[in-house]
Length: 248
Image (cartoon, rainbow, N blue to C red):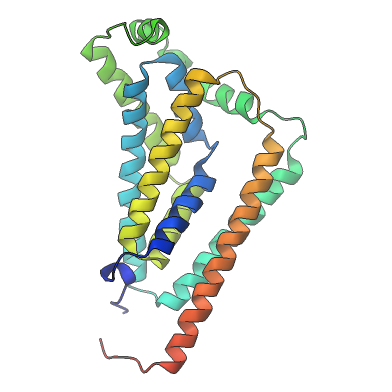
C-alpha cells in the first residue's frame, strides 16, 4: 500500500489554481448554481448564500476524504493518468451535450425552470421570507423563517451535489494533487460561484445565455485539465525511473 501523498508537502500554487479552474468550470451553470440563483430571487440573499455555500463546503471535505483514501492505495503517477482519463471523460460528455443541444437553447431559462419545479411547493409556507426579499434589505425577516430558508438551501444543494460531475472531478483532483491547496482552491471556487449565482439572481435574473456555447467551453476546459494531468503523470513517471525509491 502506498503511504506517500503530496498533502504533506508545501502548498502547491499550481494545484490551487487548477482546482479553482476545474471546480469553476464543472460547477458553473450546474443545478446547484441554479438553486442558489432561484433561491436568491425568492428569499433573503445573505441567508441563501450561506446556506448554499455551507453545503458545498461540506462536499469539499467529503471529496478530500475520498481523494486522500484513494491516494493511500494508488501510486501518484497512476493517479495522474486516472485523473486525466476522468477529465477526458468529462470533456467527451460536455462535447456530447454541445452536439446534442439546440443552438438557440437558453441555459438560464432551462436551469431556472428545473429548479423552480422542485421548490415551487415551498412558496406558500415561506411567503414571509419572499415578501422580505422583494422589499429589499430594509425588511426584517423572522429568525425562524430565515432558519427554514437556510436549511432549505443547504439540503437542496447538498443533495443535488451528490454524485454529479463536480463531486467526481473533485475526488479525482484531491487524489492526484496536494490536498490542502486543492481544498482551498475548491472552497474559493465554490464561494465565488455561489456569490455569482446570488448576484445574477438579484440583478440579472431575466438575461439569456446560450447553452451550446457554455457546453463547448466546458468541453475545451476539461481537455486542458486532461492535458495537464497527463503532463504531471509523465513527469512523475520520469522521476520514478531516474530516482531510487526510498523504503516506506
